[in-house]
Length: 195
Image (cartoon, rainbow, N blue to C red; front, side):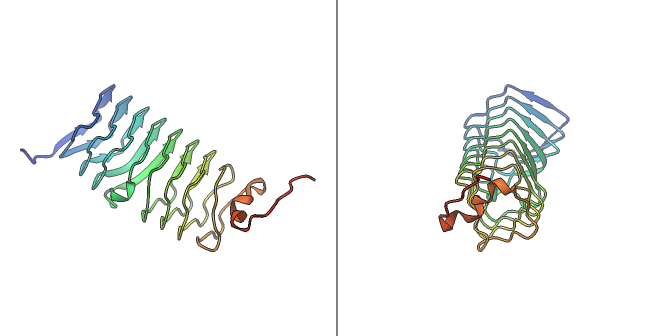
């Protein structure tokens, strides 16, 4: 089995089914993946730099040691992926209209990451540095925030979050006055919004 690294630059991959396949020793630079299926694929140790993924399925994909630098995910299904196992030196993303339900980012650094119109149900952000990240129009039902750095994070249009201010760092985080119950959930208050 060859361990030689294969490099792909500025390539476009469309409608390729990698379901349960193992991809090894590959580097992708400025590549675009459109409607590709990585369901239960093994991407361990591969690198993706300045790559765009459009309408791809990454459900249950193994990403141990995989590098994603400036990776852009658009309308992708990324269910149950453990991003905490990725290469920490190549770790920057943006997500637009993605389903990231049941994924984990435990202990990672996601400063300034943009989550736009994403579903993040039951996603684990425990011990994540999310400083200055943006959750625009995101559904955070059941998402876990524990010992998370949320300083300057924009939650103004996010919904269904439950964040304990005593267990997270929230300095200068932005919230809408209409969604403040997400910060008070543990007190089980009955909040009346009538004028």
